[in-house]
Length: 145
Image 1: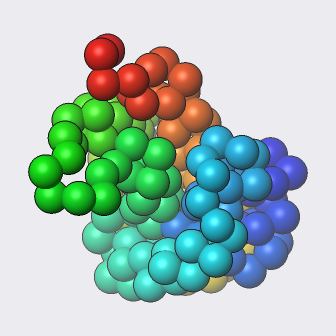
Image 2: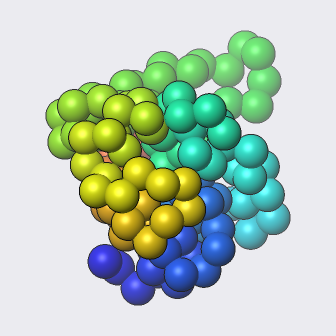
């Protein structure tokens, strides 16, 4: 476990989506204001319903911040490419993007907010952070690639 993920998610009380975005901000991967972590609060635990993994949602938000657009006429291809690549890599690693499926497949103790859940889900947060860093380093920010 990386110290940053452990500090925020595993022991720190932030959810998976909040922790993913926070780690990407603090590592300098994206230059978002720290307050943007607030917008991730509702996305933990698969949007509180076990749907799309919160770490995935936090990662997509970070990619959007790094590669997205602000105006309707601006191109969105760089962002779409980065998100597709991230999702492909995450799904390649774990077989799914779905929180409930990730938990039933990888989490030994599925009980909500259990020690086992946090310990196991830390892997998803760590991988999401690493994959965002890889995708951005691979040139997903560059519209020419």
